[in-house]
Image (cartoon, rainbow, N blue to C red; front, side, top):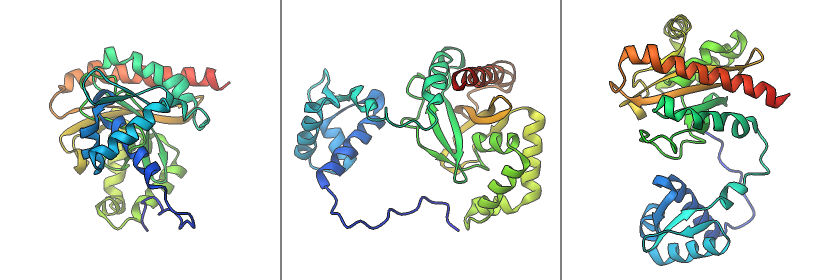
Length: 270
């Protein structure tokens, strides 16, 4: 059983290529440092001719989604892009409560954080401070899917959720035919990992996720009125943070942030 997102259903309508390319440009601009890039760089990133990219960017500029930057040929996103999501109300507590608190905590935590919820056997990043942290080495993290068993986010969630939900999530992982499925079927190892996480008081990943082997992370659960709401992590290059600083400084700060998010989320949702 594959846990990859299902393929789009066949459509009787022909794709509008210019719309697809325009959306590709917005995505590339969102991934660019500071949301700024030149038409030449964007054309290269999207695999299109520079003249085509320039024409589409000017169309987006006329509609108010991008503006010209200070450098020749440079563009950047406007707040009009964010307005596109105003009708999306799923988990609005994240933008209303979690995002401002996470941004305010950047000064104390320094390293970037991600807020994640579970979806389809993956941890999905719902909010992130990568765009605000000067120490971030990643961009455009929102929407990223993380494996459960080899990330601090997933380990924290498995340790904090109910036994019934944990069994269901582990069953999903065990259906996979890749190395993640092999890990999930090694139940004694999974049980040890969960027990160690509970005993430690926070989840830890020291580069076990192959795609991010040079990075470590810690993660803690976010509870609201006794309900597991999300998981919050802090990401940093391996060996960049000492064990003493992790234990005495960063994990307590992350736990305070998680507690504040949970407390304020309850007040907001009521």
